[in-house]
Length: 302
Image (cartoon, rainbow, N blue to C red):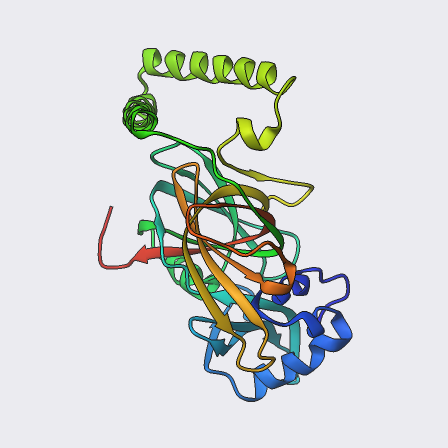
């Protein structure tokens, strides 16, 4: 049985399961996933408990995952029913910190995107690989594949830019990237410049918001909301659109490539939860649960 108080199943609707987003209704999907999984993984915890993950595909690179543990009487104790998908875009980072939360088998990752310095927190998707990495003293991380499961979203107009705007934006990104790299190495002058730029940007933003709408002032954002570090509100450009159907429910879902804060994200959303139809060049605003698959390189040493 799924644990009581499990709100994580709300996000399976992003993959076309709108009729199964309550605990009672989801039990059937749990049974189906366990009975006929596409993949299955087992690992033993430090305390000797056998933990299991069952993956069942319901479309191209997406489906459901059941996490649980095997009791002493060999009965399966189900901890959670989760959405899963394969992210296409690698977010570069220097390091990743992972912490275990109070809930069983729930781990959060924390990192900083290299180019923009944007801090990112996420639900760790590939727990089995992480457990393998824990057994090594030093493991190289190639980056993070990020996926966002949105329960609501809106298509909105872009901010118009000419060639000069785009050129200046590119130059500013390169300068900021260099400053961030120097600051990470301990350059105090670079740190001061970044602090001053952040203060100036905040002052300009506050002044403009007195007379302008936030969607015309901010081109994009990617910020956590509420009490959960891995639930984000995001706004970014739509750069790619995929339309898929759930093999079980036949519900239509969108997979969008969203670019915001120099980060490329795969966003999954049920077409029922989308206001407007996604179009290249438009922007997407929504909120959702961020999952990250950490790309470990077990052959490369630090």
